[in-house]
Amino acid sequence: MNFAASTDGLLQLAKGRSAADRERLLLALVELCDQRQSTSVMASPPVQKLLNTIFLGIVAEAERDIRARLALHLADAPWAPAALINVLALDDIEIARPIIASSPVLRDADLVRLLVEAALDHQIAVANRPALGADVVKQILSQAEPAVMTALAGNLATKLSKDDMKTLVEASRRVTALRQPLARRPELTEELAQRLYIWVGQALRVALVSRFRLDEDALDRSLAESINEIYGSHPQDVISPPSRPDIDREAMELRLVAKLQSADQLRPGYLLRALREGKLTLFAAGLAALGRFEPSQVRQALNADRPEMLALACTAVGIDRSVYPTIVTLVRKLNGGRPGGPQSRDANQYGEFTPQAAGEAFRLAAKAV
Image (tube, rainbow, N blue to C red; front, top):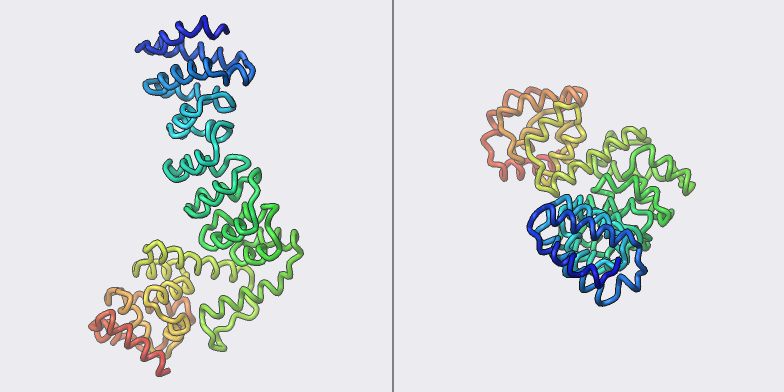
């Protein structure tokens, strides 16, 4: 294409208001792109001036499909005007994705700006971009958006530092989706693998043990000790040794309670639901978290000779007294008939306590036993 001869014609098309004019202009620009002019020619001041004028004119008023086609043709062009590329990168995600994924015009500062200002889909696209710089990775980790961190963990074309990996492994404690891609990262060290082992499922544990030759029995004992510390230290409560399915289930339930509590989504109604689903350990963990009780105190209430302590704990977390009989029945069904004793007084006597008073009474009762 003779750029000087074509300038007037392209500018006239750019000023056109009809869809036909814009389509003809796009086709002319596509032809320009397909001619594969040398970078030096395309980057020359006259050509860049022409491209800026025409391209920005198109983007301002062009239909979506035209912007999408333009983005596809410019995604790999090193000579594309920076202003236009940044505009397209903030467009609808289907238009922006090829630009974010591969445009050599985008710099680290542009990508950081997208992470701060753009929608979640755009942030995920940034995290998937190959060979991200340290500043971009740092911004992703500082924002700690789970979906974006997961995309970064799966981006094997971006190298991560030891500190980056440490941050991601720690985040995998609450973000389940991080675990599988992290287990496959080449930067994963034996030390970090041991941490990750605690949170992953059985299939990934086998992979980690095989890859790093970890001491599986020692890790399982360590995990069991952690669960014992959380669920109680009485001799009858010690888990020794736990089966792996039990470890997976209880660790998962603990993570679930912690996640619900951190999101302010742990409610008294959830405890009844847990019991109805046959999840006594989930009920116990949720009750302890809601009432700010020691897990051993809740364990004590569940195994008591009478149900009064359980009634006090339920009152303390705001469970309506009309629900007590159902809760006691479900707990006994799942806990070998305990707590023992009649439940005739529970709803009438302990339902009159305020939540605060019931909590104090529960703690005093736990100390007295």
